[in-house]
Image 1 (cartoon, rainbow, N blue to C red):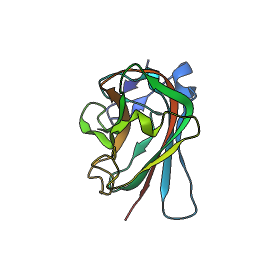
Image 2 (tube, rainbow, N blue to C red):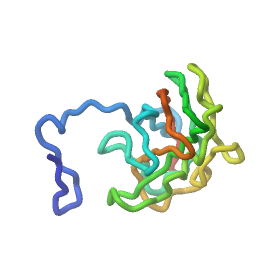
Image 3 (tube, helix red, strand yellow):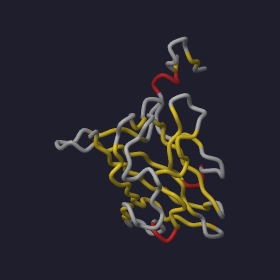
Length: 163
């Protein structure tokens, strides 16, 4: 069972220490960083929950340039589900902005396999943190609004640079 030591570090032992994850940060040749995670939409709830590995976070001082969504499994909903992706502060309990990366991104943007949608400033569904510099580091969170997803897997890519 994981625990937090006196330095604030999460300590994991046994099988939790080597759990495979569906997220990570990729090295690029330019100054831009790319963080990618896979979201199974049916695993989302109406409250923001942390996704990705225990070590995957967007650092303080990062300037978010864009977010892309690639559909790998057809996304469906019994209603008009919308996707929120945001950040939670390092303490794992305080909201940085739970819809700061994607804010009510409509299902029509990512409902077909192979569909790629890029969210930049001015695009419907983009969050308020895109185009800004983070004042705090944050873990990635996700949730849905309006209606639950009945199927779907998407890959989220978050692009940032350190000015």
